[in-house]
Length: 542
Image (cartoon, rainbow, N blue to C red; front, side, top):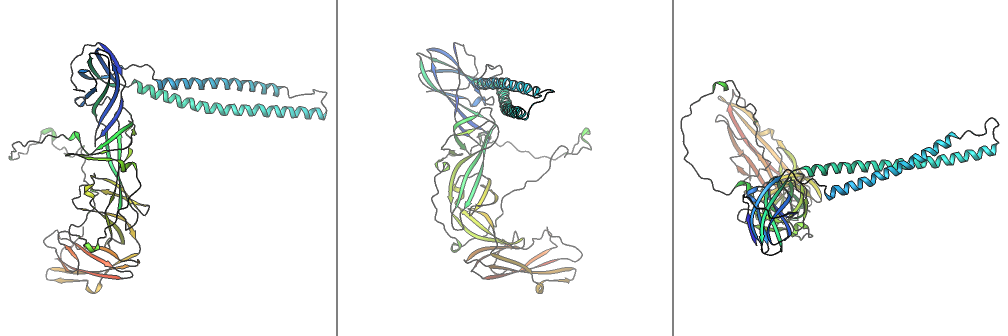
């Protein structure tokens, strides 16, 4: 086997051979792709210059590698852009033109038929006056009328059918003419070529592979999360939107998806001496009175990540391990997963066609059954409904990337969520929708809510009662979330007075109850807190 990297030096042309190679396999990274082209070539004895033509013009030159299996020596490899490619008609264009010619012949034949029928109609209509001044008897008139009616009906029926066929043919002609124009435009585009000079002592047949990197290709993850019911594990379908705009279609190729990013570089940065000095404010004369924000965009980043409380814990008694069911076998089940030090690769089991149009092509990657336990959650301060929550464990072992996910429950689409693979927690929570059989109320308790003046301060005491009723036929585990405000000013004092059996997060002000409620049972919780602030100031809740 010979292996040769790209070098730019001249070659002495001996025998030159143009080579058509096919894309055999691609490894698609997050923002580029590694492409392998293959070709089997008969090499004569002596020196031969091989021109691998019709390649992507976006090839990154230093990435080019050429390998050959056979008794030859690779002398040099060059890469070039061909702006003066051979403009001879391709077989595809020739086929279009042959079809177009046949259709135009049909138009001529139908036009001749139409002209003859039209002439006959003119003759019939010009001779419809019969009898002259002498007139004709009734029988003769009936016979002539029947003749004209039958003849004109036949003529006009044929004219109608011919016009209908001509309309169809002309539509096909326009469509094929557009395809020819598009094919001619593609034929006129520059292409990339790899020139390989080889020597052979005797004639031989050699298998060549071209290996190179191209930009304008990549993939993004997308997930389907399906829960059959509130007892089954969630089926996570790992999919990918693969796209490429390299200028060359990938037809029926072996696809490997990699989580690597070769554009990022693998060289460790080096620290240089870091200086600090006084800042001398100097403004150029021609920059005075100029906004520093001109032609710039200021904004903020909105993270779609869900926020879950750090100290929210589920006891082992509340967790229900679910037996995994074996799903039916799919393409994604046959995907081979390979982990390396820096990336994970997914070898897709069936070939795919990915056109060079920049449009995403959905590829099935892998299916997983994820161990899941279910409970309910409610935030009555924001919404009186309760939500069924699926909490997945062990997800961090599945080589996932962050991405959008479609959520399904009991066969129905629930909505979309964002799967954050950078989540440091070992449990991933997904909301599966509202359950109207759990009734929640939140009421202000007037007896303990008051407002008093104490010296120069105002003291407000607030109390709320929360009720959760289970009208289902089974026990439920539910997390009830409340909160008290957090002071942002030292003159405002917030004191939690009562939140029995709750988990308190002083940093965030979250108050959480973990409850198990039996059928037709109602549980009540009370939260009470004080606000103290100067009486000459007004407070605002943010």
